[in-house]
Amino acid sequence: MELLTARHRRTLSRPEFWTDRRSKLLDDIRQSLEEGLEIPKTVRTHVRDMPILPEMVGARVGVYNGNEFVEVVVRPQMIGYYLGEFSITTQRVRHGSPGIGATRSSLYVPLK
Image 1 (tube, rainbow, N blue to C red):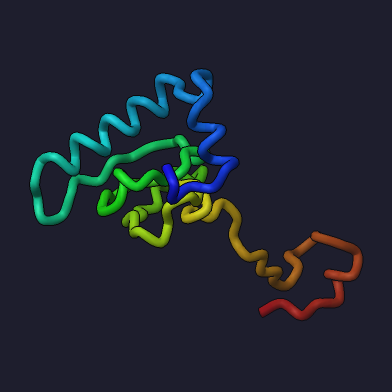
Image 2 (spheres, rainbow, N blue to C red; image 1 turned 60 degrees about the vertical axis):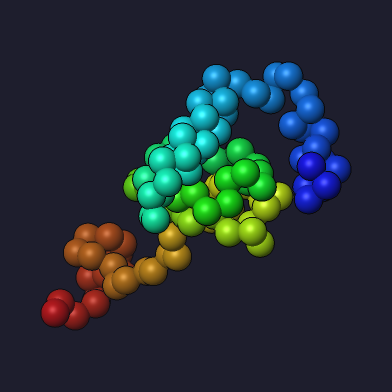
């Protein structure tokens, strides 16, 4: 617990924090690490607001970003961060040229 910030320690001490989803995620991670495989089995989850705990180090977690599961390998430097911080949900906006009929000005854009 000393590795976590005060905010995380306080959050983890509350009984309402440990919902069924978070408890099951932690149990699944423990089980995948106990199997003794060289590369642990990936645990897929939608729980993005779970803080990374010291016992999760070495686990492979597939965090859902709204489109796909992004695989995250938990390292000691990640302790105290949230799982969702390593699975970006937004993409960079790339605007192209306007299509036919998009605006009045697109009438003057030469077609390719």
